[in-house]
Amino acid sequence: MMLFALCLTSFQAHAQRYLPGMKGLQVTAGMTDGVHWNSDTDFAYHIGAAYSVYTKNANRWVIGGEYLHKKYDYKDMQIPVEQFTAAVSYTHLRAHETLSDL
Image (cartoon, rainbow, N blue to C red; front, side):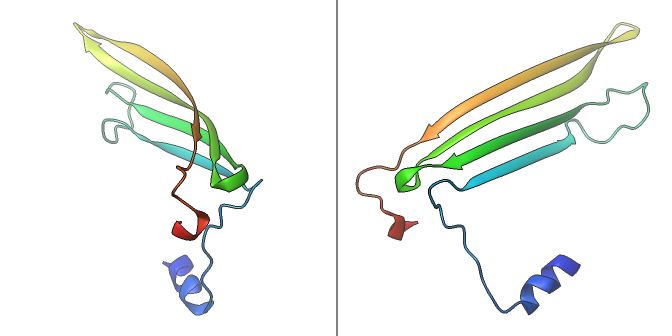
């Protein structure tokens, strides 16, 4: 709430510029199947990070990864399952799109 009020009082607006060489970092985390804090339940969570770089003409490279941890009930025990996901992408603007359209 304080951050929102601070943004309103700055009297300036700044937009993302898509400048060549501009870099960004995205970090995500969360609970997958709700919030369960004790170890006897199916506590599941995910964490991830992605790094992006803008190139010429507002094209963009993104590389990132995510980790998922989840437990499945089986008979009288729980089986932990872990998943690692990696992604690499390149976004290329089409010929009719220009920076003025963004």
